[in-house]
Every structure is written in structure tokens, then in C-alpha cells.
Amino acid sequence: MSDEFGNVPPQAGAPEVEKPWGTPVETGYQQVPPPPPPGGYAVPPQGYAIAPAGSGLSDSAAGAIAYITIIPAIVFLLIDPYKDKPFVKFHCFQCLGLAVIGFILHFLVVIPLLGLLLVLLGDLALFVVWCLCILKASQGGSFKIPVIGRFAAEQSGYNV
Image (tube, rainbow, N blue to C red; front, side, top):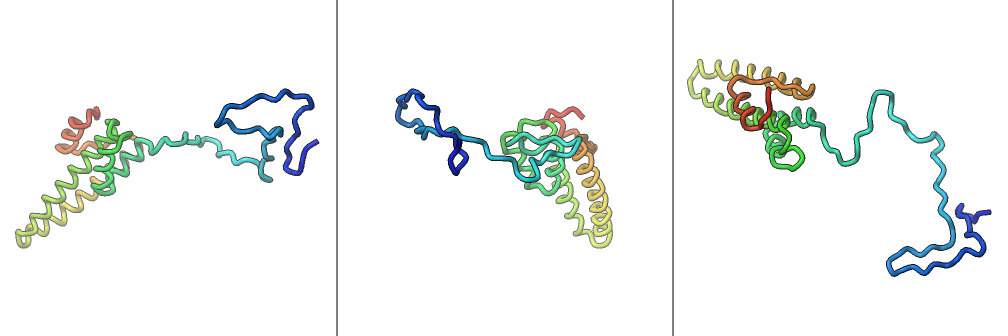
């Protein structure tokens, strides 16, 4: 026998227990869990795992996102779960190195015609390297750029 809310009344003759302050008061009714939704509970497809709550980004996702601009790279170097991970730190330092090379490359524009040609070719090369870095980081690997990659590996402690 239950009331209109689905609660079951207490057993007859159940002893009353005195509760301390701050303890929820029992109304004498047992709580009944709600029925499942009409379609049932959602189950993930085969082969997909549910990420634990509060786990954040995976290392490969954080490494790939670090290359979007220098802002995520700097943020990942500062916030707590990622600043201690060598894989993420490597990709952050390598992104910052690519940004410095791109910044220096654009100073060649002051040379009239040759500078413009070098900047265009350099930008194309940086774009290809940038795409390779994002692709490898998203796969959990790394594309080590010759000079920048060695510096990034030394700073992060990541063995490439």
C-alpha cells in the first residue's frame, strides 16, 4: 500500500529514534526510485567508453588544441592538470616556437621583392608543418621540428 506519491508507509510498531540537529527528519515513508524513462536508459554504442566525470581533455586532444593559437598553448602551460604532463608541454612549447619563427619570418617583408617571395614560401612551409603537428598530436604522437622540437623536448621532459 502506498500513497499518491509512491511512498510506502512505515511498519507498524517501528521504534522512534531521536535524531541529532542537522540530520534530515524522516517522514516515515520509504523512498521508491522513479521508474526508468519510456525508452530505457541510454547505453553508449559498442566500442565507446564513457569518460569519468571531471576528467577534462585527453592528452592528445590538449596537444592538438595547443596548436590552434598561442593562447591555448600558454593556458595549458599554466593550468594544473596539463602543466605537469610532458606530452602536452612538448606540444605547447613547439607551438610557441612556431609562432616565434612566423613572427621573425614576417620581418623579411622589408626586402622588396625577394623578401615577399621568401615570406610567401615560408608561410606555406609553416602551414604544412603546423598541419602535420596538429595531425600527429591528435593521434597521440609528435612531429619533431628540427630546432624547435629539440628545445621543446628539453623544456618539457618529453622523449621524442
